[in-house]
Amino acid sequence: MPKRDRRDYMKKYMREYMMRYRKENETYKEYTKRKRHEWHVKHRKKALSVLGENCKICGYKGVKSHSMIIHRKGGKPHCTSDLLGIIRNINDYVLLCCPCHKAVHWILKYFGFTWEQVVSYKKEIKNE
Image (cartoon, rainbow, N blue to C red):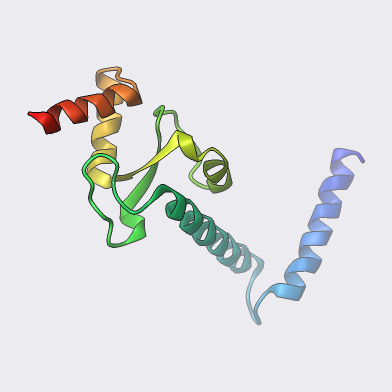
């Protein structure tokens, strides 16, 4: 199926799907925003349940789940909406509080540390 036909088919399918499931007087933009938010909340909860509740650096337990950040260990940028990718590759991610997340990125950028070096440096500081 050519790309153009596929795109037209998807538009038609999504229009029909939306007409069945959207709320009364809800625009397409409002509908997609609501569905995207519901999807994001569902998968973020799933990722947080696997990663735990505490910050891996300082041990802070986030009272609100949005105060905790899912961080990729290598420091490479990733799409925050790619929560399914996070769940599939859960060993590549850790949970950090906001201050520790900023500090880790600063250390990775200016000192050129790897994630393992950051963790070992944290252990050295705790032992002193």
